Length: 204
Image 1 (spheres, rainbow, N blue to C red):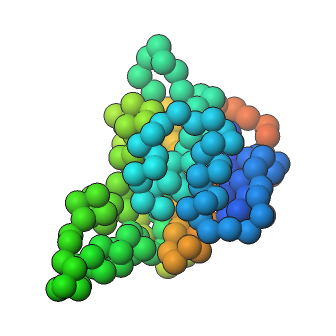
Image 2: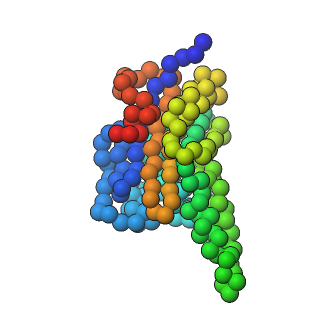
Image 3: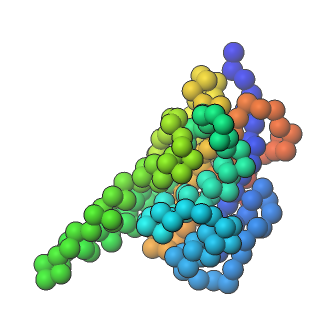
């Protein structure tokens, strides 16, 4: 029997602002993403030095996941939280940077530190390592955020008991244009967003 699932919490990151469950929790004057992400990291007192080695897409996904998962992660037992993310540009922003490092024959230097991020699902790995997750994870590429697909896929994971919670959403980054929308979904009954779904929250 298919059980109803519920959105527990959501976050949006765009235009130098982070909005958690509809409330702005961090906003700065217009700047580039590198500066914005660094200031956000310090504002929330995140202690994870590897953050500064990540590419922009991973930083974007990491920040959203950090603020949603930290309150619900347990240190006493394994957390069965699946990750289901998508975007349009894949890892193209990093791919371009890597291509530049090998295009100039005079300054040929293929950077291993950049190369490792030339797959979009690396951001899932970064989140999993941070929160010690060993559960299901998938990254999809769509022309636009396919909320119906993501919602259905998440519900299948929950109703097949492959996960207790799903962190799902959209993390798009290219040429310093970015938007992240992430939410947590589970079978735990919640009245917070009974009149909302992923699509309506994403488009708020």
